[in-house]
Each structure stands twice: as structure tokens, then as C-alpha cells.
Image (cartoon, rainbow, N blue to C red; front, top):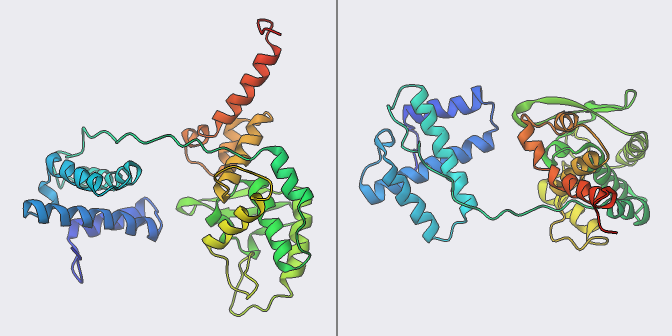
Length: 304
């Protein structure tokens, strides 16, 4: 079901709520609305009713069954249901419905894929022992890895860094995070040196459009997600046998190494740009492993 030029008023209000009050990106808002639209199409096909204001949980459950039978993963189903939950919470809060049809819904169980950070040895091998070419792309790639590891920024945040976000005098960068929240992150002196070196190489690139972004392709245009992923995967494939080698694993590594070396979790939370401590605590499993290692080696009850 596509709305064409007409969108139900309550859905338009929900869209405005996500954009203006929750400050979600246009990409996120579109994903929410598509999930709701697909659900509406389902209840129309199965129940011959497309009124989202009179939905009951049986209709929701029938959609979950359909998705599951079509081999949609539990993770994807949970994400779609999360869109519905947000929608019906909004309708309830704005008094457009009296009861939330998803009130008693419990998320489907999903396998816990423990993401394993890179070791300090692996980072040392990449940054200090691998050979990067001395041209624009080599300097760019090394700086990308260095920034991910020493600042913990997200892939999107790195791609959207602009020249004006650099403050080399004060050794900081300004990052625009989720929901347009700005944060200032310190950079290490050796990272500053790599930035200066990269900027010299960047000046040799022919910029084909007005481009104030820090990181560019060789043809002078802005980087994209897939290229950044390929850069990380390429270099770390030389030193690591881990299944997942991605920008997010480097963010994970940044947090884990800080915590393992005694950093305060609240400070790590601020550096990562997390809105809640619960998000940061995801990274503490590795720190716990490190603590267990220290504990087993130091406690008097340990059998030598």
C-alpha cells in the first residue's frame, strides 16, 4: 500500500513527531514509516481492514508469523515491531487510541553475537608495521584507521567530518552525532601529525565539486559507507583472523581498550556520544574478561 499524494493525518503527525521532536534522521523516519505501511498492507490483505487505529494484537501476531514464515530474521522482526510500538505509543499519548495493541508484546529471542574487539597487538601491527603507500590514498587510509581507533567515532560521523570541524591548535575535533548532537573529542599529538600530513596530500587532489569534507575519494568526491568498510576490512585482513573487521569493531575496540586501561565508564560514554550508560555497558564484557584474567592471576586462592 502506497499513499501516493495522500497520507493519513495520524501518520503524518507521527512522521513530524519523529523528525521534529525526536530529531531522527530522514533515513530513520523513512524506515519507521515503511514498516508501518507494510503492516497496514498486511492487515488489509488478511483482514480486509486498513484502519490502523482499530488494530488488535492478533493482527500484529499474524504479521509476525508471516514475517517469520518468510524467513525474516528475529532481529529484523524485532526492529519492525519496534517501529509499530513507537507508532502506537505516539497514538496513545496523543489520545487517538485508548489502548496500545502491543502493550504485552515481548521481543523475539535473538542470538547474542558477541563482537570481538581487535587486540592492542593487532592495532600495533596495522598502524606501525603494515606499509601504507606514501600517496594521497595511503595517508588517507592510515588516518581513517587512526581516527576510528583513537576517537571511537561512528562511520557516519567520520564520513561527515568537515575541514571546519578540525581544531588542530587545541587538538580537538567537533563531531555531529546521532540526533544532531555535537560533541568535542580530543585528538592525540601523533594523530594531529597524521592529519597535517593528510591535508598536504589532500591539496593535490582535484576537487570536482564544492567539497568541504575532510575525507575524499581520489576523484575529489565525498567518501561513502561501503568504501570506508572496505578500507578497514582490507588492512585488518592482513593481521587478524576475526570474522568481522569493520569500522564498528574499531569503535568497539576504542571503548574496550580505554576501559581495560582504567578509564571511567562515564567518560567513555561521553566520548562515544551515547545518551545512556546502558549503551556503553555493552562494551564492558571485554573489560570483564580482562578483570577475570587479573583476578585469577592475583587472588591468593588461585591454584598456582
